[in-house]
Image 1: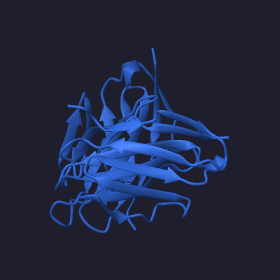
Image 2: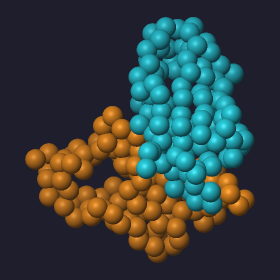
Image 3: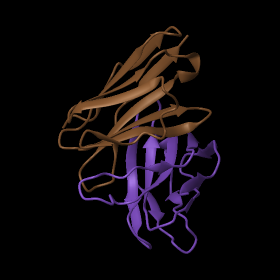
Image 4: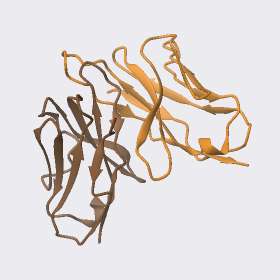
Length: 117
Length: 113
C-alpha cells in the first residue's frame, strides 16, 4: 500500500542554519504531496504542496520539489529561525476519485525540529 | 473565516466513562476527517465522511469508538467505555469539494485515568 517515510528526529539546528528534512514515498498512482507543520499545542497547518512531478511547492522560505524518479519530496529552508521549531509532517493524497469527495491523507511519522538561538 | 472548531479542548475522565468529542467543520467543506495522535503511533486516520456519509472507518480501533455526522456542520466522536490507552490528542479536519487540502482543528487532548 501507499506510505510515507520521513527522517527520524529530533533535528537540532542553530539559527540561520540550512535545513533539510528527507521524505520519501511509496505510491501506486500519482499522488499530490504535502508538508504540514504542527507548532506546540496546535493542530496541523498546511505548509506547502505539489500536485505533479517536478512541481516545486514553497511558502515562508520553505521549499520542496516533487521528484518522481526518486519518489522524494524533501523539505528545505536556507536559514531557519527559532520560530520554525515545530514538528513537520510529509503526506500524500490522491485527488478525489469521485467528484465532490475529498481524499484521505497518508502521513509520515513526523520530524521534530528544534532551532536554538 | 472561522477555522475548524473542536470541543472540548481538554478532557479528563475516568476509565469506563463515556466521552464525546465534537467538531464543527469549516462552512462549505463537505469532507470531514477524525485523527488520533499519540507518541507511540503517530497520526492515525480513524474515520472520514463525505457529504455526511462515512466513507472509510477502517481506522476505528474497536467497537468502543463510534462517529456520527448528522449534518454538514457537526460531527461527534464517541468512546464508550473509555480506557487509559485511549489517551491521545484527537484532531478533526475538513476539506472542500474536489480538493484534497485538509484544514485541521486545534485538537482535543483526552486523558483517561
